View 1 (cartoon, rainbow, N blue to C red):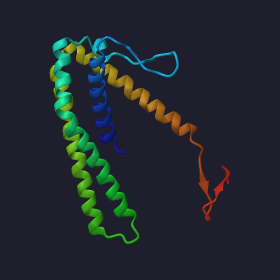
View 2: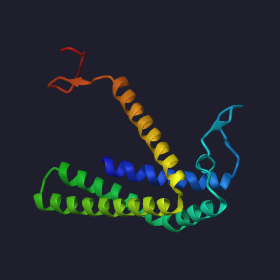
View 3: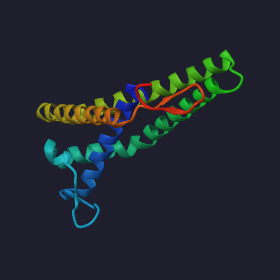
View 4: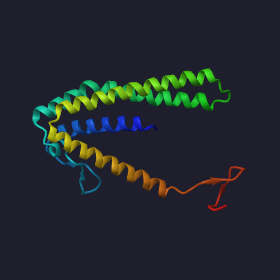
Length: 171
């Protein structure tokens, strides 16, 4: 997955999280497993958003969620079609090129929506809130990178011999 798609998904997730948090208002405890409630930061409270700002974010999310979801669906579909064109039995350059252009168009639309979302959020936040939001984004990105690094380190190296059988490491 490209970095742009990941960023789009992050922003959409964050905006949707903000609307979920708004709906929950001041309730920090979300249902979890067992007796321990799952804790999630209340971004509205952490940013110190006013009710007016909450309403504006909620309204933006409600109005734009369908377009964002559709753009994400088109990116996934275009990616799947491009993969199929590349790995089909008979590869046709013109088909691959057509699918690549469709994928790039879908990515461009998803990016446009992402940047519009960021701009809309930026217009809602005060300067102080923006500083806090940027710090939250940075923490989230660092945590995501750490998680990806742990996954890479935890994933066993699978090496295959010429017959497709797994070989022990070091051979």
